[in-house]
Length: 481
Image (cartoon, rainbow, N blue to C red; front, side, top):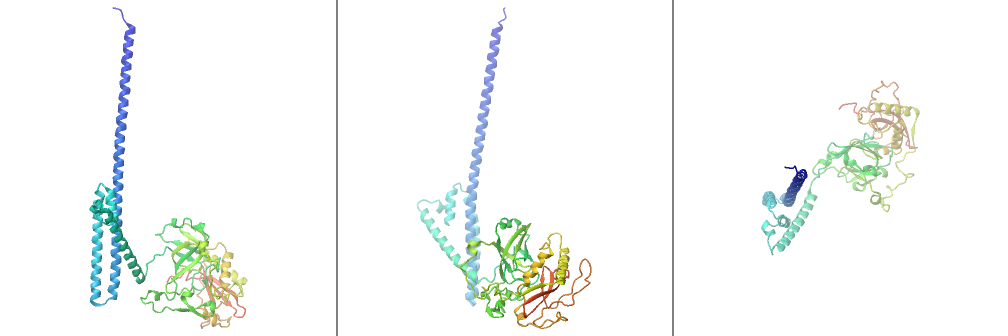
Protein backbone atom coordinates (compact mmCIF):
# COMPACT_ATOMS: atom_id res chain seq x y z
CA UNK A 1 0.00 0.00 0.00
CA UNK A 2 1.45 3.30 -0.99
CA UNK A 3 1.91 6.05 1.57
CA UNK A 4 -0.31 9.13 0.83
CA UNK A 5 1.85 11.83 2.22
CA UNK A 6 -0.15 14.82 0.96
CA UNK A 7 -3.43 13.46 2.33
CA UNK A 8 -2.02 13.07 5.80
CA UNK A 9 -0.67 16.62 5.81
CA UNK A 10 -4.01 18.01 4.66
CA UNK A 11 -5.86 16.17 7.45
CA UNK A 12 -3.37 17.41 10.07
CA UNK A 13 -3.70 20.99 8.86
CA UNK A 14 -7.50 20.84 9.00
CA UNK A 15 -7.39 19.40 12.53
CA UNK A 16 -5.04 22.17 13.68
CA UNK A 17 -7.22 24.84 12.07
CA UNK A 18 -10.32 23.40 13.76
CA UNK A 19 -8.59 23.35 17.16
CA UNK A 20 -7.41 26.97 16.76
CA UNK A 21 -10.94 27.99 15.83
CA UNK A 22 -12.36 26.34 18.96
CA UNK A 23 -9.66 28.08 21.07
CA UNK A 24 -10.54 31.51 19.69
CA UNK A 25 -14.23 30.88 20.21
CA UNK A 26 -13.62 29.84 23.82
CA UNK A 27 -11.61 32.99 24.49
CA UNK A 28 -14.36 35.15 22.98
CA UNK A 29 -17.03 33.46 25.12
CA UNK A 30 -14.86 33.83 28.24
CA UNK A 31 -14.32 37.55 27.59
CA UNK A 32 -18.02 38.10 26.99
CA UNK A 33 -18.90 36.29 30.22
CA UNK A 34 -16.31 38.29 32.19
CA UNK A 35 -17.59 41.58 30.69
CA UNK A 36 -21.18 40.66 31.58
CA UNK A 37 -20.14 39.91 35.14
CA UNK A 38 -18.36 43.28 35.44
CA UNK A 39 -21.38 45.11 34.05
CA UNK A 40 -23.58 43.35 36.59
CA UNK A 41 -21.24 44.32 39.44
CA UNK A 42 -21.16 47.94 38.21
CA UNK A 43 -24.96 48.07 38.10
CA UNK A 44 -25.15 46.68 41.65
CA UNK A 45 -22.60 49.24 42.89
CA UNK A 46 -24.52 52.10 41.27
CA UNK A 47 -27.76 50.88 42.81
CA UNK A 48 -26.12 50.63 46.24
CA UNK A 49 -24.66 54.14 45.87
CA UNK A 50 -28.03 55.60 44.90
CA UNK A 51 -29.66 53.85 47.85
CA UNK A 52 -26.99 55.26 50.19
CA UNK A 53 -27.50 58.78 48.80
CA UNK A 54 -31.25 58.52 49.33
CA UNK A 55 -30.73 57.25 52.85
CA UNK A 56 -28.30 60.02 53.75
CA UNK A 57 -30.61 62.65 52.29
CA UNK A 58 -33.50 61.36 54.36
CA UNK A 59 -31.30 61.24 57.48
CA UNK A 60 -30.15 64.81 56.87
CA UNK A 61 -33.69 66.11 56.42
CA UNK A 62 -34.83 64.35 59.56
CA UNK A 63 -31.86 65.65 61.53
CA UNK A 64 -32.38 69.21 60.34
CA UNK A 65 -36.06 69.10 61.26
CA UNK A 66 -35.20 67.65 64.67
CA UNK A 67 -32.65 70.42 65.28
CA UNK A 68 -35.15 73.09 64.22
CA UNK A 69 -37.79 71.75 66.56
CA UNK A 70 -35.29 71.48 69.41
CA UNK A 71 -34.11 75.05 68.75
CA UNK A 72 -37.70 76.28 68.78
CA UNK A 73 -38.32 74.43 72.03
CA UNK A 74 -35.25 76.02 73.61
CA UNK A 75 -36.36 79.49 72.52
CA UNK A 76 -39.81 78.91 73.97
CA UNK A 77 -38.20 77.65 77.16
CA UNK A 78 -36.09 80.81 77.46
CA UNK A 79 -39.15 82.97 76.81
CA UNK A 80 -41.18 81.18 79.47
CA UNK A 81 -38.29 81.43 81.93
CA UNK A 82 -38.15 85.17 81.34
CA UNK A 83 -41.91 85.39 81.89
CA UNK A 84 -41.51 83.33 85.06
CA UNK A 85 -38.98 85.83 86.36
CA UNK A 86 -41.30 88.74 85.64
CA UNK A 87 -44.49 87.11 87.01
CA UNK A 88 -44.46 86.55 90.79
CA UNK A 89 -46.40 83.93 92.75
CA UNK A 90 -48.59 81.33 91.10
CA UNK A 91 -48.18 82.82 87.65
CA UNK A 92 -44.43 82.33 87.87
CA UNK A 93 -44.82 78.72 89.02
CA UNK A 94 -47.26 78.07 86.19
CA UNK A 95 -44.86 79.56 83.65
CA UNK A 96 -42.02 77.46 85.07
CA UNK A 97 -44.14 74.32 84.77
CA UNK A 98 -45.00 75.23 81.21
CA UNK A 99 -41.33 75.77 80.49
CA UNK A 100 -40.53 72.27 81.75
CA UNK A 101 -43.33 70.87 79.62
CA UNK A 102 -41.96 72.67 76.57
CA UNK A 103 -38.51 71.26 77.28
CA UNK A 104 -39.89 67.74 77.61
CA UNK A 105 -41.93 68.12 74.46
CA UNK A 106 -38.88 69.34 72.59
CA UNK A 107 -36.92 66.26 73.62
CA UNK A 108 -39.80 63.99 72.61
CA UNK A 109 -40.12 65.74 69.26
CA UNK A 110 -36.41 65.35 68.70
CA UNK A 111 -36.55 61.58 69.44
CA UNK A 112 -39.64 61.20 67.25
CA UNK A 113 -38.02 63.08 64.42
CA UNK A 114 -34.95 60.88 64.66
CA UNK A 115 -37.03 57.69 64.56
CA UNK A 116 -39.05 59.05 61.66
CA UNK A 117 -35.84 59.85 59.80
CA UNK A 118 -34.71 56.24 60.23
CA UNK A 119 -38.05 54.98 58.90
CA UNK A 120 -37.77 57.30 55.92
CA UNK A 121 -34.22 56.03 55.24
CA UNK A 122 -35.54 52.45 54.99
CA UNK A 123 -38.28 53.47 52.57
CA UNK A 124 -37.44 52.64 48.93
CA UNK A 125 -39.17 55.74 47.62
CA UNK A 126 -36.92 58.39 49.16
CA UNK A 127 -38.38 61.34 47.22
CA UNK A 128 -41.82 61.27 48.87
CA UNK A 129 -40.23 60.70 52.27
CA UNK A 130 -37.96 63.73 51.86
CA UNK A 131 -40.82 65.88 50.65
CA UNK A 132 -42.97 64.80 53.60
CA UNK A 133 -40.18 65.52 56.09
CA UNK A 134 -39.50 68.95 54.60
CA UNK A 135 -43.19 69.82 54.70
CA UNK A 136 -43.47 68.84 58.36
CA UNK A 137 -46.07 66.11 57.74
CA UNK A 138 -46.11 62.35 58.23
CA UNK A 139 -44.86 59.74 55.75
CA UNK A 140 -48.37 58.77 54.73
CA UNK A 141 -49.36 62.34 54.13
CA UNK A 142 -46.25 62.91 52.00
CA UNK A 143 -47.04 59.80 49.89
CA UNK A 144 -50.73 60.66 49.47
CA UNK A 145 -52.44 61.61 46.26
CA UNK A 146 -54.61 64.70 45.81
CA UNK A 147 -54.21 66.00 49.37
CA UNK A 148 -50.40 66.20 49.29
CA UNK A 149 -50.28 69.73 47.84
CA UNK A 150 -52.60 71.23 50.47
CA UNK A 151 -50.79 69.45 53.32
CA UNK A 152 -47.44 70.74 52.01
CA UNK A 153 -48.74 74.32 51.88
CA UNK A 154 -50.18 74.03 55.39
CA UNK A 155 -46.88 72.64 56.67
CA UNK A 156 -44.94 75.52 55.13
CA UNK A 157 -47.30 78.05 56.70
CA UNK A 158 -46.83 76.40 60.08
CA UNK A 159 -43.05 76.42 59.62
CA UNK A 160 -43.14 80.13 58.71
CA UNK A 161 -45.14 80.88 61.85
CA UNK A 162 -42.75 78.85 63.96
CA UNK A 163 -39.78 80.70 62.49
CA UNK A 164 -41.43 84.07 63.09
CA UNK A 165 -42.22 83.15 66.68
CA UNK A 166 -38.71 81.81 67.18
CA UNK A 167 -37.17 85.01 65.75
CA UNK A 168 -39.26 87.18 68.08
CA UNK A 169 -38.39 85.02 71.07
CA UNK A 170 -34.69 85.12 70.14
CA UNK A 171 -34.77 88.91 69.92
CA UNK A 172 -36.43 89.16 73.33
CA UNK A 173 -34.03 86.65 74.87
CA UNK A 174 -30.99 88.34 73.31
CA UNK A 175 -31.99 91.75 74.68
CA UNK A 176 -32.38 90.28 78.16
CA UNK A 177 -29.24 88.12 78.07
CA UNK A 178 -26.83 89.34 80.77
CA UNK A 179 -23.61 88.46 78.97
CA UNK A 180 -22.21 86.84 75.86
CA UNK A 181 -19.30 84.42 76.33
CA UNK A 182 -16.30 85.01 74.08
CA UNK A 183 -13.02 83.15 73.87
CA UNK A 184 -9.94 85.12 72.82
CA UNK A 185 -8.23 83.95 69.65
CA UNK A 186 -4.88 84.85 71.21
CA UNK A 187 -3.04 87.53 73.13
CA UNK A 188 -0.94 90.50 72.08
CA UNK A 189 2.70 90.95 72.96
CA UNK A 190 3.28 94.68 72.81
CA UNK A 191 6.11 97.10 73.50
CA UNK A 192 3.79 99.01 75.86
CA UNK A 193 4.44 97.17 79.10
CA UNK A 194 2.10 99.36 81.15
CA UNK A 195 -1.01 101.45 80.61
CA UNK A 196 1.06 104.57 81.22
CA UNK A 197 2.66 105.63 77.95
CA UNK A 198 0.36 103.64 75.68
CA UNK A 199 -0.84 105.96 72.87
CA UNK A 200 -4.39 107.20 73.18
CA UNK A 201 -5.10 106.45 69.51
CA UNK A 202 -3.72 103.98 66.96
CA UNK A 203 -1.06 104.98 64.43
CA UNK A 204 0.13 107.90 66.57
CA UNK A 205 3.34 105.92 67.13
CA UNK A 206 4.12 104.20 63.80
CA UNK A 207 7.29 102.66 65.27
CA UNK A 208 5.28 100.67 67.83
CA UNK A 209 5.50 96.91 67.29
CA UNK A 210 3.28 94.14 68.61
CA UNK A 211 2.93 90.42 68.06
CA UNK A 212 -0.42 88.60 68.02
CA UNK A 213 0.16 85.05 69.29
CA UNK A 214 -2.70 82.72 68.39
CA UNK A 215 -4.15 80.35 70.97
CA UNK A 216 -3.36 76.63 70.60
CA UNK A 217 -7.00 76.00 69.62
CA UNK A 218 -6.73 78.45 66.67
CA UNK A 219 -4.83 76.97 63.71
CA UNK A 220 -2.12 79.04 62.08
CA UNK A 221 -3.84 78.54 58.72
CA UNK A 222 -6.36 81.18 59.83
CA UNK A 223 -3.72 83.80 59.02
CA UNK A 224 -3.36 82.67 55.41
CA UNK A 225 -3.92 85.62 53.05
CA UNK A 226 -3.78 88.29 55.78
CA UNK A 227 -0.53 89.71 54.38
CA UNK A 228 -2.42 90.79 51.24
CA UNK A 229 -3.91 93.63 53.32
CA UNK A 230 -1.94 96.62 54.54
CA UNK A 231 -3.94 97.10 57.77
CA UNK A 232 -6.35 95.19 60.00
CA UNK A 233 -8.86 96.00 62.72
CA UNK A 234 -7.98 94.48 66.10
CA UNK A 235 -10.76 93.84 68.64
CA UNK A 236 -9.41 93.23 72.13
CA UNK A 237 -10.23 93.48 75.85
CA UNK A 238 -9.08 96.29 78.15
CA UNK A 239 -7.79 93.73 80.64
CA UNK A 240 -5.60 96.20 82.56
CA UNK A 241 -8.43 98.59 83.52
CA UNK A 242 -8.43 99.52 87.20
CA UNK A 243 -12.26 99.37 87.28
CA UNK A 244 -12.51 95.94 85.65
CA UNK A 245 -14.28 94.52 88.71
CA UNK A 246 -17.20 96.89 88.08
CA UNK A 247 -18.04 95.11 84.85
CA UNK A 248 -18.41 91.81 86.69
CA UNK A 249 -21.00 93.10 89.16
CA UNK A 250 -24.63 92.24 88.27
CA UNK A 251 -25.81 95.87 88.28
CA UNK A 252 -22.50 97.35 86.99
CA UNK A 253 -22.48 99.71 89.93
CA UNK A 254 -19.79 102.36 89.90
CA UNK A 255 -19.52 102.80 86.15
CA UNK A 256 -19.16 106.46 85.22
CA UNK A 257 -21.35 108.04 82.56
CA UNK A 258 -18.93 110.93 81.96
CA UNK A 259 -15.14 110.98 81.92
CA UNK A 260 -12.35 113.56 81.79
CA UNK A 261 -11.03 114.01 78.25
CA UNK A 262 -7.26 114.70 77.96
CA UNK A 263 -7.67 116.83 74.83
CA UNK A 264 -10.18 119.06 76.68
CA UNK A 265 -7.78 119.56 79.63
CA UNK A 266 -10.06 117.73 82.00
CA UNK A 267 -13.39 118.66 80.44
CA UNK A 268 -16.08 116.02 80.92
CA UNK A 269 -17.78 114.16 78.09
CA UNK A 270 -20.15 111.21 77.81
CA UNK A 271 -18.12 108.00 77.77
CA UNK A 272 -19.84 106.69 74.62
CA UNK A 273 -18.90 109.94 72.85
CA UNK A 274 -15.21 109.23 73.46
CA UNK A 275 -12.76 106.40 72.82
CA UNK A 276 -11.83 106.00 76.48
CA UNK A 277 -10.93 102.48 77.67
CA UNK A 278 -13.19 102.93 80.72
CA UNK A 279 -16.41 101.93 78.95
CA UNK A 280 -19.60 100.04 79.92
CA UNK A 281 -18.12 97.09 77.99
CA UNK A 282 -14.30 96.95 78.07
CA UNK A 283 -13.82 96.24 74.36
CA UNK A 284 -11.14 98.05 72.37
CA UNK A 285 -10.84 98.65 68.64
CA UNK A 286 -7.55 99.56 67.00
CA UNK A 287 -6.13 99.74 63.50
CA UNK A 288 -2.74 98.17 62.96
CA UNK A 289 -0.39 97.81 60.02
CA UNK A 290 0.32 94.27 58.84
CA UNK A 291 4.09 93.70 58.86
CA UNK A 292 4.30 89.95 58.42
CA UNK A 293 3.47 86.46 59.69
CA UNK A 294 5.85 84.26 61.66
CA UNK A 295 4.55 80.74 62.33
CA UNK A 296 1.40 81.29 64.43
CA UNK A 297 2.13 84.98 65.09
CA UNK A 298 0.98 88.10 63.26
CA UNK A 299 3.43 91.03 63.45
CA UNK A 300 1.62 94.38 63.67
CA UNK A 301 2.71 98.03 63.69
CA UNK A 302 1.23 101.19 65.17
CA UNK A 303 -1.30 99.52 67.50
CA UNK A 304 -2.17 101.31 70.76
CA UNK A 305 -2.63 98.15 72.84
CA UNK A 306 -1.11 97.19 76.20
CA UNK A 307 1.05 94.08 76.45
CA UNK A 308 -0.89 90.91 77.28
CA UNK A 309 -4.28 92.12 76.04
CA UNK A 310 -6.63 89.28 75.02
CA UNK A 311 -7.59 89.60 71.35
CA UNK A 312 -11.17 88.69 70.42
CA UNK A 313 -10.88 88.97 66.64
CA UNK A 314 -9.07 90.62 63.76
CA UNK A 315 -10.70 91.83 60.56
CA UNK A 316 -9.08 93.15 57.38
CA UNK A 317 -9.17 96.90 56.80
CA UNK A 318 -10.98 97.54 53.50
CA UNK A 319 -10.44 101.12 52.25
CA UNK A 320 -13.49 101.39 49.97
CA UNK A 321 -15.92 100.98 52.87
CA UNK A 322 -13.83 101.62 56.01
CA UNK A 323 -12.39 104.97 54.89
CA UNK A 324 -15.24 107.51 54.95
CA UNK A 325 -14.02 110.79 53.47
CA UNK A 326 -17.26 112.61 54.31
CA UNK A 327 -17.20 111.68 58.01
CA UNK A 328 -17.11 114.52 60.56
CA UNK A 329 -16.02 114.83 64.19
CA UNK A 330 -15.95 117.57 66.86
CA UNK A 331 -13.31 120.25 66.63
CA UNK A 332 -11.41 118.97 69.65
CA UNK A 333 -10.99 115.63 67.89
CA UNK A 334 -10.02 117.12 64.51
CA UNK A 335 -7.09 119.09 65.90
CA UNK A 336 -4.26 119.27 63.40
CA UNK A 337 -0.71 118.31 64.25
CA UNK A 338 0.33 121.95 64.81
CA UNK A 339 -2.63 122.55 67.11
CA UNK A 340 -2.34 119.21 68.92
CA UNK A 341 -2.97 120.05 72.62
CA UNK A 342 -0.92 117.05 73.75
CA UNK A 343 2.12 117.80 71.56
CA UNK A 344 5.38 118.54 73.37
CA UNK A 345 7.94 121.08 72.31
CA UNK A 346 10.96 118.80 71.96
CA UNK A 347 12.26 115.41 73.06
CA UNK A 348 15.84 115.73 74.30
CA UNK A 349 17.96 112.60 74.62
CA UNK A 350 21.40 113.57 75.87
CA UNK A 351 24.59 111.48 75.54
CA UNK A 352 24.17 109.96 79.02
CA UNK A 353 20.52 109.10 78.39
CA UNK A 354 21.32 107.67 74.95
CA UNK A 355 24.04 105.47 76.45
CA UNK A 356 21.64 104.31 79.16
CA UNK A 357 19.00 103.46 76.55
CA UNK A 358 21.51 101.53 74.45
CA UNK A 359 22.77 99.60 77.46
CA UNK A 360 19.24 98.80 78.63
CA UNK A 361 18.24 97.65 75.17
CA UNK A 362 21.26 95.32 74.97
CA UNK A 363 20.50 93.92 78.42
CA UNK A 364 16.86 93.35 77.52
CA UNK A 365 17.83 91.63 74.28
CA UNK A 366 20.02 89.19 76.18
CA UNK A 367 17.02 88.15 78.30
CA UNK A 368 14.93 86.95 75.35
CA UNK A 369 14.49 83.24 74.90
CA UNK A 370 15.06 81.21 71.79
CA UNK A 371 11.42 81.19 70.67
CA UNK A 372 10.80 84.89 70.14
CA UNK A 373 13.24 87.74 69.77
CA UNK A 374 13.00 91.47 70.44
CA UNK A 375 10.62 93.73 68.56
CA UNK A 376 13.49 95.90 67.26
CA UNK A 377 16.71 94.90 65.60
CA UNK A 378 18.83 97.82 66.79
CA UNK A 379 19.06 100.35 69.58
CA UNK A 380 18.47 103.19 67.10
CA UNK A 381 15.10 101.71 66.10
CA UNK A 382 14.16 101.44 69.76
CA UNK A 383 15.25 105.04 70.35
CA UNK A 384 12.90 106.09 67.54
CA UNK A 385 10.04 104.39 69.41
CA UNK A 386 10.92 106.29 72.61
CA UNK A 387 10.97 109.62 70.81
CA UNK A 388 7.61 108.99 69.11
CA UNK A 389 5.96 107.97 72.37
CA UNK A 390 7.27 110.98 74.29
CA UNK A 391 6.46 113.42 71.45
CA UNK A 392 2.98 113.67 72.98
CA UNK A 393 2.24 114.43 76.60
CA UNK A 394 1.46 110.99 78.04
CA UNK A 395 0.80 112.28 81.55
CA UNK A 396 -2.65 111.98 83.04
CA UNK A 397 -4.99 114.96 83.33
CA UNK A 398 -4.37 115.14 87.06
CA UNK A 399 -0.60 115.26 86.57
CA UNK A 400 -0.80 117.96 83.89
CA UNK A 401 -3.13 120.15 85.96
CA UNK A 402 -1.02 119.81 89.12
CA UNK A 403 2.50 120.43 87.88
CA UNK A 404 5.22 120.84 90.45
CA UNK A 405 8.66 122.35 89.84
CA UNK A 406 11.40 119.90 88.98
CA UNK A 407 13.57 119.14 91.99
CA UNK A 408 16.99 118.00 90.74
CA UNK A 409 17.96 116.46 94.09
CA UNK A 410 14.80 114.65 95.13
CA UNK A 411 12.59 114.39 92.08
CA UNK A 412 12.05 110.68 92.57
CA UNK A 413 10.72 111.14 96.08
CA UNK A 414 8.35 114.03 95.32
CA UNK A 415 4.87 113.49 96.73
CA UNK A 416 1.53 114.72 95.50
CA UNK A 417 -0.57 114.28 92.38
CA UNK A 418 2.08 115.84 90.15
CA UNK A 419 4.69 113.10 90.70
CA UNK A 420 4.49 109.59 89.45
CA UNK A 421 5.02 106.46 91.54
CA UNK A 422 8.55 105.96 92.93
CA UNK A 423 10.89 104.35 90.46
CA UNK A 424 11.70 100.68 91.13
CA UNK A 425 15.22 99.68 92.05
CA UNK A 426 17.54 99.15 89.10
CA UNK A 427 18.09 95.47 88.40
CA UNK A 428 21.44 93.81 88.01
CA UNK A 429 22.66 93.87 84.44
CA UNK A 430 23.45 90.35 83.10
CA UNK A 431 26.99 91.54 82.25
CA UNK A 432 27.60 92.94 85.73
CA UNK A 433 26.23 95.36 88.40
CA UNK A 434 25.44 98.96 87.62
CA UNK A 435 28.46 101.05 88.44
CA UNK A 436 27.27 104.62 87.80
CA UNK A 437 23.64 105.19 88.86
CA UNK A 438 22.14 108.47 87.71
CA UNK A 439 21.63 110.77 90.75
CA UNK A 440 18.85 112.71 88.98
CA UNK A 441 16.07 110.36 87.82
CA UNK A 442 13.06 112.04 86.29
CA UNK A 443 9.80 112.44 88.17
CA UNK A 444 7.79 110.76 85.36
CA UNK A 445 8.31 107.38 83.78
CA UNK A 446 7.20 105.08 80.99
CA UNK A 447 7.92 101.37 80.45
CA UNK A 448 8.49 100.36 76.81
CA UNK A 449 9.31 96.73 76.01
CA UNK A 450 10.13 96.12 79.69
CA UNK A 451 12.64 99.01 79.79
CA UNK A 452 11.97 101.61 82.51
CA UNK A 453 12.56 105.16 81.18
CA UNK A 454 12.48 108.17 83.48
CA UNK A 455 12.07 111.68 82.16
CA UNK A 456 11.21 115.25 83.09
CA UNK A 457 9.04 117.78 81.24
CA UNK A 458 9.47 121.53 81.34
CA UNK A 459 6.08 123.18 82.04
CA UNK A 460 7.10 126.39 80.30
CA UNK A 461 8.54 125.11 77.04
CA UNK A 462 6.93 121.67 77.00
CA UNK A 463 10.27 120.00 76.26
CA UNK A 464 10.82 116.45 77.43
CA UNK A 465 14.26 115.39 78.65
CA UNK A 466 15.06 111.70 79.05
CA UNK A 467 17.05 111.11 82.25
CA UNK A 468 17.78 107.41 82.60
CA UNK A 469 16.78 103.91 81.41
CA UNK A 470 17.21 100.37 82.69
CA UNK A 471 15.52 96.97 82.40
CA UNK A 472 12.41 96.92 84.57
CA UNK A 473 12.59 93.79 86.76
CA UNK A 474 8.81 93.67 87.29
CA UNK A 475 7.48 93.75 83.74
CA UNK A 476 10.45 91.73 82.44
CA UNK A 477 9.54 88.90 84.81
CA UNK A 478 12.77 89.04 86.81
CA UNK A 479 10.79 89.52 90.02
CA UNK A 480 8.43 86.64 90.77
CA UNK A 481 5.23 87.64 92.50
